Image (cartoon, one colour):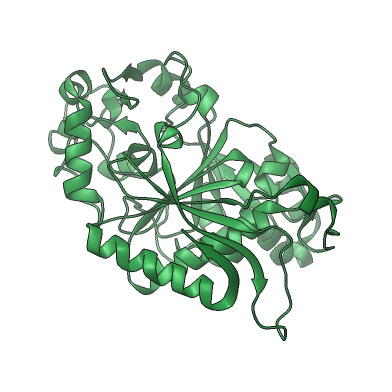
Length: 376
């Protein structure tokens, strides 16, 4: 398998006096992008630039995205019915049901083989591929996406997302699925992204209960908003609101948005994250996301627009901003330091204090106006 060969070439290194981890694979060497060989005996490392940048094909809005990537589909997920569908069985069912093909296509989502994985089982989830949705997130999409954690109840599962302008190369709605247990398997004692250990400062609690009695309360679980501290890129973090055990016993869970008989915290988190995303989209601010803790912790990283491919010696995708730094050449991999990483991200990627504070203030105003909240 192509991914097995790629993984065998991957190198990991814990950066001294830092929590970050450096990653390198010769297939990602930036120098190759400008020095393609034409010799007949050129090795497998020489690929087209498009192949190096993209994990799946997208040759125009009028083309069949599924058909183009048919050879990369591992399986399908039916998020609404919480089912995993074998790719071969899916094709057979389509042949037997021509009249329902459109309905089937819209209800299941393909998971694709990633030819440049960060670790074993680092795959790509395409959502609503036949509809051609752009790489834009909403709370409704997040709420559906979080069902993936029911299908794969693995505490190491993480979901990554890069918006356009945040090192996303294809404008079709897609996400990275990966396990920190696999990605960091060669780095001792590291089982999560380093940003997950960054100190947090709480800025807001919200019960998500409307101030207006005329509004219907849809959520049984509130949310907490945090900001990362001592991390080179400023990020918002959304988690379920922690409540006193006795207080929780006195309230009956609502029928909507539940895991069985218990309130579903991820529905509340999705709604709250959607509020942040709306602000970022309206202001044309690129962003990266890391989703952890089975959907109960979402890191939203507003940022400056991405750089040209040769403007930095490591990439600035979600994984890089969260502490797994994908180096573009071996020299950078061997010599990367904590101060170099932090200095670059603070200067070239992270929003300045004024821009970030503006987003934070708009977020707080939005939720305080509509819901019962506590500011910090």
